[in-house]
Length: 128
Length: 373
Image 1 (cartoon, rainbow over the protein chains, first blue to last red):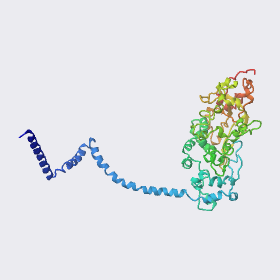
Image 2 (cartoon, rainbow over the protein chains, first blue to last red; image 1 turned 90 degrees about the horizontal axis):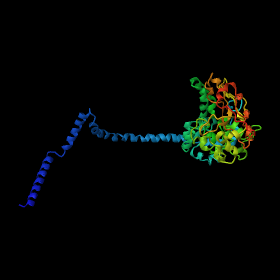
Image 3 (cartoon, one colour; image 1 turned 60 degrees about the vertical axis):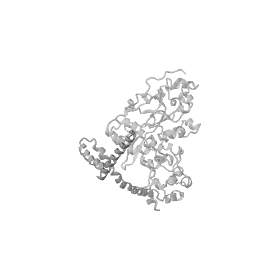
Image 4 (tube, chains in turn green, purple; image 1 turned 120 degrees about the vertical axis):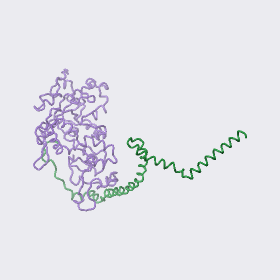
């Protein structure tokens, strides 16, 4: 057997072993094993690291922040009251002023109705 | 200030304002003045009406600030808006006593606060202090006639001097020769405080300065010998203004009905030169014209005893820039009109007993020697 043929045989053998191993692992549910291991480690790390406050926050933070985005859906809905609130003042601000203009542009009406208020500081003496 | 009938004060011009003024396009009467629009009853319609909607900071920011933010921001800190120059000057005389400050505050609210100027009282109506009244049918003008606005408040001294209403004393040459309105020298930026905050009228650099328009009058810049000789020793007014109005007191009080009033003793026309109480790099002159301020120790006696405990903090003969400028004046006709002439300089003989100490720093110790000319 030539050296080249020998390498081929060796490579096929190694691949065969690896494939066999994978098949066995798959049959035993080994594909899911790493994840539970990691999850299982997280609480353990969290509990152990709590006093030192070093590794726990990174582990918990993503878990915590994962919740608020769901919660922000509610505040987003509060935009509606804001929109209705601004409608009210706007409605008040454009109260009809036609009567004001009608009277105050009429010289005749004002001559009849306008009265001078009592002058202030009537007791004052000298140039102010 | 021309007297207005009650109806004239509130007459709105349909053409000038309602149909064409941009302000009428962005807000209606009620949006600025309040009141009720859904009634034909006069009293009900005026319920809640604000005659001058620009009289408080909040209203100015809300009503004018939307479009005129820069002007409004400056205006709210200007002397015109809250008259804080009174606080600066009277405040200096109060001393540290809390009682004095409290009494002054009460007097200020009763007698002085009405003098502040609002946006509307320059651009729309006559000042409230002279009874108010729309000027151009509610038309907003960036510049209204000064005879309907400025002189409403600055009338008895400045307007009378400027337009020659004091008997025997000519009007200011800027008025007689050029007909210049106030705004020609006092710019909008300065009047609104855009050029910088001031603690009182003469705080900081002169504004306007005579040399702004007359640069050749600066020492060494022209051919007039007197300008070159006197240099920065004299303020321009020392040679070019004449007799001006001096007031000696303004006693404020209230009657039993709570009506506020004042009593001012008759003014005196006089012309006095003294040492510059505000000498600085910006006002370098040794000599300036002085005018007696309407102050005496009893001005606020109605509100308490010895309120002006620090009366001597400022001279009662104050730095002045009379508005009656002449090219030729009695004092600039000859050198000896001033040199060696004790009458033209403020001296202790001109003072009342209570103000000697206050003016010690503005009375020249020595007079300029006689020249024999």
